[in-house]
Length: 389
Image 1 (cartoon, rainbow, N blue to C red):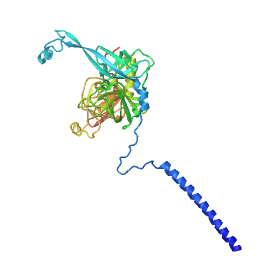
Image 2 (image 1 turned 135 degrees about the horizontal axis):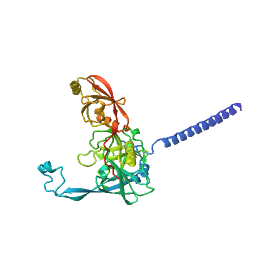
Image 3 (image 1 turned 135 degrees about the vertical axis):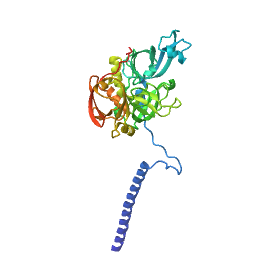
Image 4 (image 1 turned 180 degrees about the horizontal axis):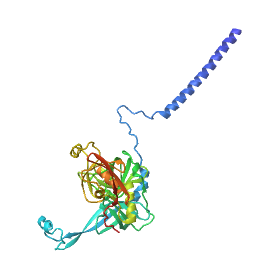
């Protein structure tokens, strides 16, 4: 009897242990299956099938916030054309080119199209000066709500290729200013404008370079270079960062065919804001000036001719009598620094002078006959251009 009871007890204990172990295994298997279902892809990619690309950046919200603040600009310019049959004759121009046209003139009208950016709800619009034109012009601004309003030219600044317009309207959608000094190369940007009269076109690219100068577009150059598609008609449009802020005014393209080549230039927003402030207050841009000075980077050949050592600085090639000449700067001097900062680019030097407050003093360190000296040059105002009101 004892043997029978012991055998039955052992059998029952084995069955209970088996049930417990199998239950735990089943629970572990179910949990593992659930984890696999959540983590593993629904269908494994077949061998040789193309990989699914990662989604790109989404700028739909940025475009919705900014596109309505970009306008269409149409300008009609009256140009006087001489009636002289000898107008293209070089002999006639040599003797009579500076004299009034004795045959009179006739009017010809030229039109241009571009883009603009609304920068205030009460109707201030920023665009390029080459879009507006020169002389007697009629400018029309086309808004997003299909209204076409006659614009008043507040002022133009050919040195930066910017112009400020004013239309009689209220409550317009506004583009928020951004800080262009915080831009970085390879940052995403949108170009918004009206290329080929295709209104409110948005293109995407990156910042290709910063501080581009010596491009030959304007007298005062400090451009943002971008590969966002910019085409004829984009001039005056907006360059926008990923936060929906205006960080540039699209100005020009580099092209061998007249179309998109992947190299576009925009005026930085910080420079544009300064131009807007001056045009609003004075109808012109006030810039610092020390006279006309032509400079060239110091090369080893120039250093040998001047009997100096080193390769940093700018050589004064030619200059006219102005504040710099009167203060003691002479052709042949090597400019080493401006206000304590080294200089190596003529455009950067002239921009720094132009940005100096009028009435201030520029401290210019020069090298002359192997001797360093510092010259204090008073900063005057650049020759005024006729304001347009």
